[in-house]
Length: 242
Ligand code: BV8
Ligand code: ZN
Image: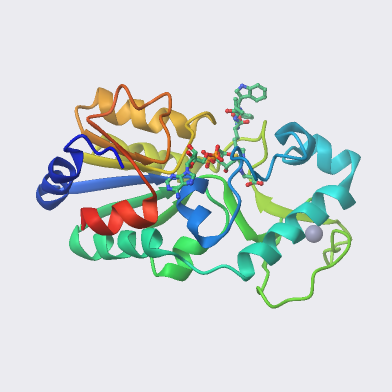
């Protein structure tokens, strides 16, 4: 792994961090066996994002979109949080002003024990009625249904995630921006940094003069602008940073 001496610097910054913001993407769940979006065995491989994760796709083919989410829920239910998730739980214990901002919808940060989580793109374990908006939380053991269930009001339910073209939950986004603006250190872990507005958080941290550390298997559009770009697996690097 090429760390170009970054590990020492990054752990130094973490030790003296007064307020830490962390942004995670699918890469932190890869070692739990959850396929990433754009990787080789990615979730998008046999479909394009526009085909599945959009309101239009759900309106056009609710069964196909629903089945894709049921398949992902089964994958996630069988997965366990990995040392990368657990390292962030430890960081939350050590640093009082800590915010975990995640693009992931898999709920593995919750299961690992993280508390202060801002879910920018919603939660795959929540279904929301398309008519009255009422939400129900799915239990992982729950039997998968072959088509979107119906709400008491008669409306069909959809996965409680943010699709392409949909706005992020306003209060969650505001809190994420605030956390990044007030952070003196930011960790950006396992994200390809192509989806906005989430991808705008790291440049925001850089513009505010925070120390920004990226942990990723490969280079991303951010790698050249961050203070430290550590190439490696989150599940190995994060425990080392502790
Ligand atoms: C919005 C939830 C406006 C659903 C997701 C053109 C057309 C249409 C839209 C747009 C467009 N141009 C820009 C847009 C906006 C669009 C966007 O950014 N599109 C991109 C593709 C260009 N954004 C939106 O539509 C957003 N909404 O803009 O609304 C608006 C405003 C007001 C009013 C109305 C509308 C909504 C975006 C949210 C979409 N939902 N997910 C679901 O999960 O099913 S996005 C989905 O992909 C994820 O949530 C995640 O956020 C995103 C990116 O994925 P990553 O997490 O980065 O994962 P990826 O596979 O890409 O990368 C993994 C990384 O990990 C890699 O770098 C890899 O190297 C690394 N890695 C792998 N293994 C490891 C590792 N690193 C460390 N350790 C390892 N072991
Ligand atoms: Zn309803």
